[in-house]
Length: 425
Image 1 (cartoon, helix red, strand yellow):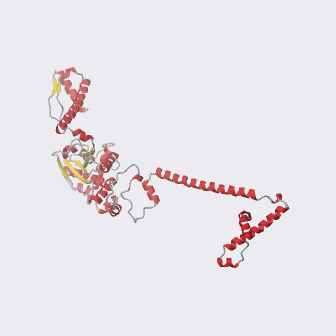
Image 2 (tube, rainbow, N blue to C red):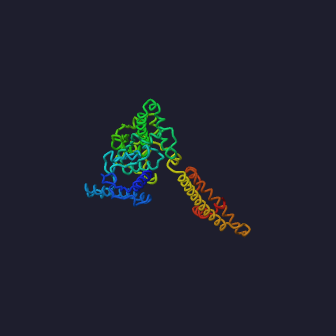
Image 3 (tube, rainbow, N blue to C red):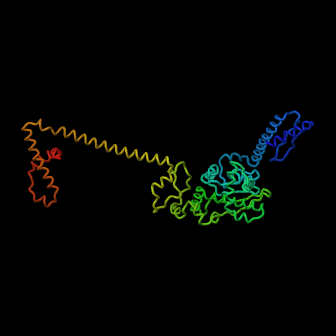
């Protein structure tokens, strides 16, 4: 905006003298040539619109030149690009316009995935970075992650000043202030302000490399590849770039030595011995994470012979509160349904028993004297039948000593026993 206004004012001043402003042909990558324009023919607003339009035309012209140059090298270049990507690198760098990843590394489009923010920060609450980290590792299966800082970094300079840069910038650079706190003794020992700034830039890169290693998606992939090939991937690199020379410097980051063993154990998420036993099957492929945990095998799952955690712990760790509540409700509904079915069966049995009693047992007041005598005789027979059944259940030795009853009486007892036994009970 400032540049636009300056150009407008300069053009208006020139137009007052009747001068003509023109652009000359330039090399690729700079502004394109334009026809001569007499500024006296435009007022300020129209001139600003024209300049803005020329900038857009320059971008369109640059795109045309790019496409033509690529097709000259390979006529199928864009057809190949449309088929997909298989980059080997993820670049996490600063947003500074002077540090383009592809050009610095000499890579073509499609060879590196790029994420940039102020001062090349790796923050686990930055969903944009976490999304590209998961996508690059689990779907593109990249083999190298590069955290790249650069000297003369404005974000680092801001963190070294006693100044409130206002939100959200101040919130962001405060993370670089935290790096200063962690390495205060080393930084305070450097007397030269410029050397201290450059060292902070290097330390910031190394701390962000540590933050990359802490992420579960990184450790999970490194655990799997280490078991399969003997080399954990993705590898993590820390680079610095000097804009004054274009030189790239490797800080030789090593996750095995970047933190003390005591501190490193805090961030380790996977037990290598348990993972080796769990992945005894050499043909098992790397599992990408689908939408729910039920459809994937956990990389830190318990190997054979190891007792799993308590059920409640597993539920709390794998489900959200809503999922836990829904599962408990389903279990409760299933229990209630089973109990209701059992009650229905019991009710049917009770209704059938009452009906049988009402049909077979008449009140004594409605029976004649002869019928009463028949009932009395039947009761005696039932008693005898019950006694016989009890004796049959006794040990064989006692049963053989008792006299056998006539077959006809036994048959009659069997015929009448069920009904009168029920009355007796």
